[in-house]
Image 1 (tube, rainbow, N blue to C red):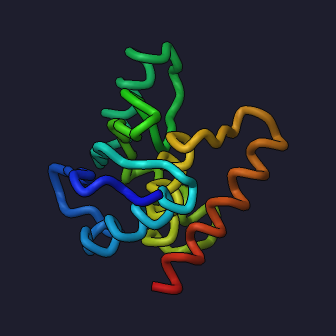
Image 2: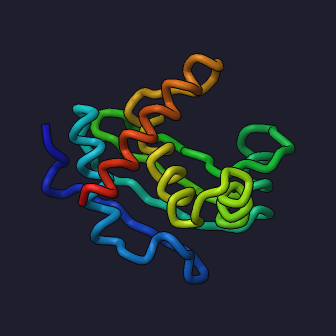
Length: 145
């Protein structure tokens, strides 16, 4: 199964976001991951926002008064259609915490949202471990490109 010809993957931000400079390489990588997961993409829109913006969304839509690095709003799982909001502030802080580069952490969060759309969950410790392992496998695909 391969992404549809009309697959749309877009990246939007009010400012330049480190780690998402090469849109064509990111698109190809995301499409490869989705193909390997046996899914199709209709539309994925990534929005890079501040902690404050994502906190407001987390409060408004999920009634969670906590910071988060990503919120995924699915419209369709087959083919995949979703809006994915990522806090560049949180990703930067997580990169420090996890002792990795900002680019690596940004790619992890980008693919995390895609994996949710492919059916992966992280609600339990076991699911979280499996999700992290799959993220690592996806990140290895980036290095191989």
